[in-house]
Image (cartoon, rainbow, N blue to C red; front, side):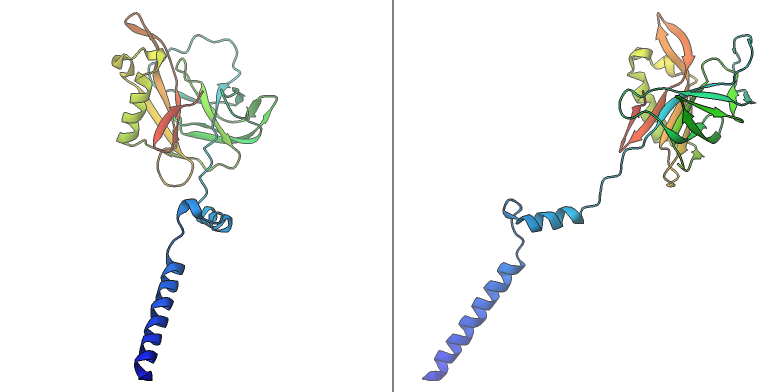
Length: 224
């Protein structure tokens, strides 16, 4: 008669042990996690990448008085000068070591911000009116000039056509030029600069100039 009792006792032990193991293996509901479990879960998540820092600069070749640049085609000219770095609409101002780049000219040079400007012994500028803007990146940023993809071009155009400056007029984007740089080594555009109509009013383009856009995750946003 003792044998059935032993069998029942063994079965009960197995059942209790199985329930205990299953309870230990079951995940704790999110709302009931202990502080240690929450800390471990947050530590396991990859840290979000910091947003790319980019500033806009205006390159002055410091030439004597000259006729207005009114060429119709990209006309690069090698020349030293100074870049006046504009204060951003938000975030810190550029300081210390930086990299200056003109994507349309495919030109980049290291420099240092002093009193809001970067003096460059050798750079280049475009003789066309309104194409004196450059991008300024943190020092040591690797810059590779790349062609923006078709998807990037379409996305950039969609952003620009909605700006107040172009008044939603698609014709304002006719002849728009785009160039890009890759700064994270994946071969894809991270910053795009344009050249074309910068102000549309009364049925025609009033002035030509540039826009600078940076990739923020899956979106393109205008750098101001």
